Image 1 (cartoon, rainbow, N blue to C red):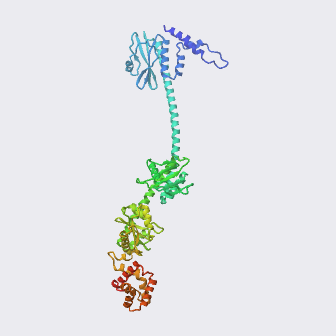
Image 2 (image 1 turned 90 degrees about the vertical axis):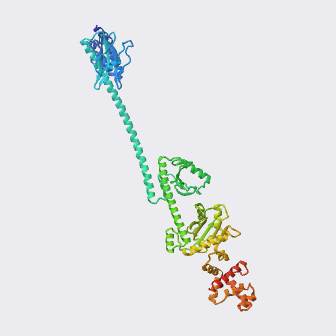
Length: 586
C-alpha cells in the first residue's frame, strides 16, 4: 500500500522534472530518466528544489501539504505559520477535511503532539522549526500510525519544509535589509543635501549677521544700513520716514526727483504692511517697517522689479529692519533727552540762573549762549501748548541759524533764538502750519548775556500783551516798536525807564555831552510850553530864531519828525522821565 503512491510520483512528478533538466556539457550523454526516479522514489529531491526556490512561506507549506499523500497513506489536515500574534492557519487545503481545533494547536506550546480528529486513529502535528524557533505546523492524519519508513519520510518532508521556510525567511530578511539599506542610503543622501543647504544658508546668515554687526559697531546710521543691505542683496535699498520722504538710498536707479505719495496713499500702504509679520511686497518693492514699540519710525525697502528676491534677501531685509528700528529708536530717545534738557535750560534762563552753569549746559547741548539772542513768546487761541504745537512753532521759526531753545509756559510757547524774527514771516508760517491766522507773537529786544534773558522774557510778554489788547489782535509785535507802551505796564524799573529815554533821546544826550549844548533841555521846555515858540523862547531866555535853529538841529541829529503825533508823544514822555525821574542825568 505504501508503494503505489511512490510509483505514481515516480512516473508523473519525477519524469516531468527530469525532462526539464538541462543537457550536460558537450561530449557527455543524457542521463537515463529512470535513474533519478530510482534515486528519488518519493519525489522528495524534486520537491526540495521547488520548495527552496519558493519565496512565499504560505506557498511552501501548501506544497508540502500536497506532497504528504505521496509519501504513504497519509493526509495533510492543516498547515500553520507562526506569526507575532500566534499561529495562523495557511489557507488552501481541501475544504472537506475535518476541522482542527486551533485552541488545541496553541496548547502544544511549540512542541510536536497529537491532535484529535474524528474518524482518524492517528493524528499528529509536526512542528516546522528553524534556527529562530518554531516556524509553523503541518498536521498529518492516517487510519493507522506510520511505520519506521513512514516516520522517516514524514520527518524528511518536515525537515525540507522547515529548511525552505528558513531560507524564505532569510531571503525576506535580506530583501528587507536591502530595502532598509537602500532607504537609509536615500535618507543619508537627503540628509547630506539638507546639510549642504543648511551649511550654505548658515554661511549666508553669518555673512548678514557679521555685516550688520559691523555697521552697528561703527555707530550705525541710515546710510550705512542701506549700503550694507545693497551689498548683501545686490538690490537698491532705501529708507523713508513715516510720511514717505526719502532719507537714504544705496544702489543704482535712484529716482530724481523722488516721487511724493499722498498722505492717504501712504497711510494705506503702512496699514497694508503692518498687517503682516515680515517684509511685504508692494508692487516692485519689498517693504519692512521699523516700529520697535508699535510706532512706525521709518520704512526700509529694496527695489525688486524682476521679483528675484529669495529667502536670503528676505533674511537680510528683516535683520536690516531690526537694526534700523534700533537706530531710529536710539535717535528718538536721544532727541527726547536733548529736548528735555533744552527745555530745562530755557526754563532756568527765563527764571534767572548762574551764567557759568548756563554757558556750560548750553555748550553741552551744542548751543552758543555767547551770541546775541531774542526771546519770542507765541500764543495761538485754541491750541494748547502740547508737543504738536511746540513742533509747529519750532518748524516755523527754523532758520539757517542754530536751533532755538524752546519751552512751554502754560498755553504759550517760548523760544530763545539767535535770529530775530522777520516781521510777520513767522506769524504767516505758523498760520499756514496751524490753519488759523488768529495767533499773536511777542518779540523782545536783543539779549547779550544769560542774565538778560528774564528781562527780555518780560519784554516779549509785554509785546504779546499789547498785541492781544490792540484792535488788530493777530500778528507780531516787537518790543522795540512799543514806544510809550513800554513804560505804561506794571513792573517797570529804573533800567527800563533809562532804556526808553536812551531810545528816544540818546543821540541828543550824547550830542549835548560832547558839544556842551542844551538840545534835550530845549526840547523839554518846548513840549512843556505846548509847542508855543514865544513861550518856549522866553522860558529858555533865547531869541525865537535861536529856538527855531535848535529845533531844526534836534530833527537832524535825532532823525525824529516832530510833526508826527506818536513821535511827539514819545519824545515828550521821554523828556519828562529824563527831567523828573532821572533828574536830568545824561
